[in-house]
Length: 205
Image (cartoon, rainbow, N blue to C red; front, side, top):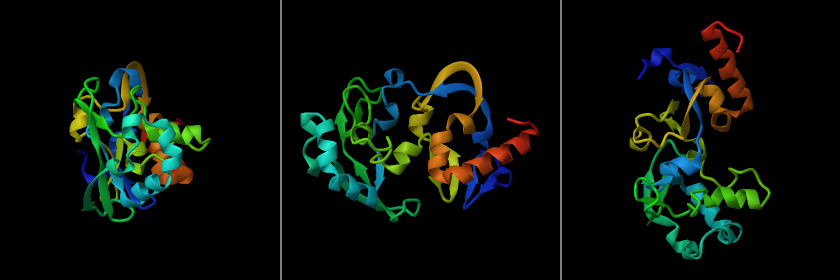
């Protein structure tokens, strides 16, 4: 982990300098990773969880029959966490899945490994992340104590759930993960990050 003095200030956040590294990687290929990142379920802000339940009529047609019980979507384990907008989070339930590398998957994961919430958003002609919880959409970037970090310390990331595919094409991570960083920083904040990255590299990219 780089010393915090090397981190980049953009808006209210400090940005992990690892996000400026150039690596031979590409976007995830879900048929290969089989949504390993969702294997243990996910933490969801209570506000997101409430909205998901309110939007059940939109979501239910996109879930398998055995996921139709709304009362079984969340585990009820509510915890305080200042990094979540409401200050509180709750976990999604999990189900057995021998095709997932960790042996389970999030209750909203479909048989083809796609996120049912994202599929429901697209089916409703909304942004793909409209119903998807913030931290799900943000991964493999995470927001922690006012910093945006590459989530490399996460056990799932270390075991291969990196949301990146192996490729021989080198690309700066902040460009590869543009959508995630725009989600966190906004378009103006992302452009500010790009400008600072170019300054640090001394180039025109």
